[in-house]
Length: 280
Image 1 (cartoon, rainbow, N blue to C red):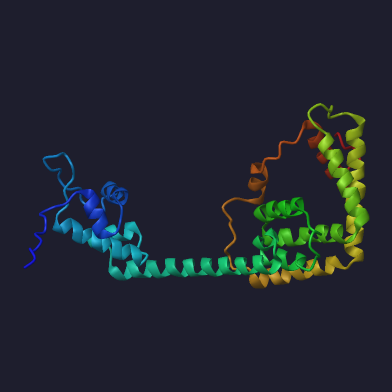
Image 2 (image 1 turned 90 degrees about the horizontal axis):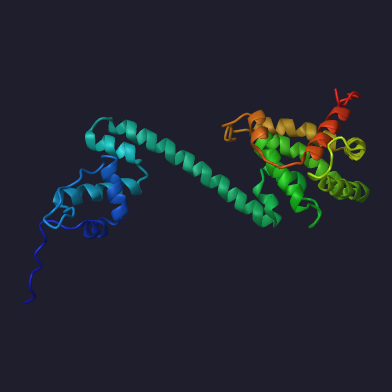
């Protein structure tokens, strides 16, 4: 006959964790938040877990697998909240998780269809730009759209997409944009903000922007922009991240522009608004 194993009266934390299918670190966390009473230490100075402790650990594991939060577990053990309330909150959490999974799957499908990081942007932006040939969009274009979407939302980025469609389809405008980018990069900290070249570059930026607007209008992209508002109203589901206003977001995005480049941007904005007294 084989000897019959004798169950121990209590076990150490490692054995308790192994049997319950969790980790010692998790068990210590349960002690800290009051979900699992901390047992007395044995003669060796270590915690010893008995039958009741193991039963609670097993129930904690099962509730965790069901998606019940630690706070709701504690309330359930304390019988401080009706179980229907706990289940109602759990259903809301699961519904939100299902919606998040649906969005993630859609993003993966867009990534596969588009074959570039463009698929990680909102569907409104992706739909506007996915018809462009490979290589028409530059990494810096996608970076700009990513920032715009974070600050102004999908609609703002979808409207900004008109600029990149125009640059991709008008080589002369793209070439001028490249020249302006190079000139901007040359405005480092060694350039005096009041150097005449700063004002000249601002005037070039203004002229280029106006040329972009004319091309956008000629290509009929303004009509597409108008339709975006209707699409956005129909598809908006309130899931956008609204933790901060657009103004707050703008002030939190670092660029590290030099004083000369910052002044160039200010001059450009004033020229575009018809302010001839740019230094007023």
